[in-house]
Length: 301
Image 1: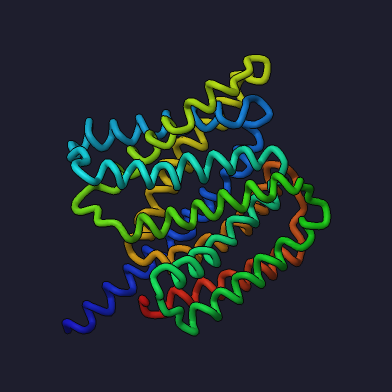
Image 2: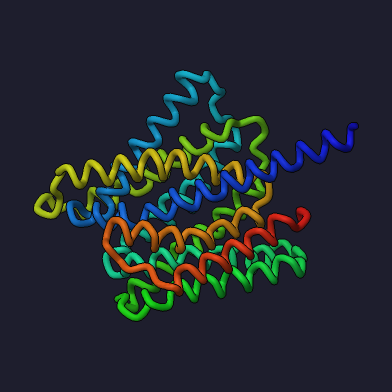
């Protein structure tokens, strides 16, 4: 009887993790299109500051004002500052700058490089053994992303500088993931962590936004407002909350959900930007789902 209950609980948790992973991938992928739209109305750092301050204030109000969660203390402030710098200021700051010179398709595809970077950095820094199932999943997901991206690469554009900045942003993100997973957060609530790291990231970017600000390049219209609201609430709040939940379960497995982001990115681009969906997209999606299923079945490493 106890074994049956345990098996039922394991299946329920597996379903929860799968649903959370799909929701995260969809919301995170939507950021590329929302950022592209926002850049038509405002400068990159203006978008960053508006997004991070709005999201951070909302989350901290929920955390401390409504839920009455405790404030960070001691070394937790240092951890939040480092995580906010890596995961918000550096990663998303560089990302939005790169988006000026990299197409939505390529920027979406770049997200899929993170599992590779996370696995390699983890193996190098922490001497972690990567299991065979993980390598097979990595191969299937990589192949799926490349197939899905193939027709988009035919017409995508980018500059060498844009690609370099984009790679640096992904590298910062991967390091941030590993940093978060290796820290002791004690009983600090996830929404508290997300709120403070987002607000601190916005504070780090604020001087750059002020220094580069040009009023003629910023139009606070409906397009700007819609972009900021979407990036702040569904992406910075909901998606990141899900991501932190997945990271706390297993950072290596969580990273594989990033492979699904480009596929969702193409689907969103089709609806928002009328980019075509081909047999390549469908084939790539099937391979990605297969790879994700395999890694989710594997035992925690």
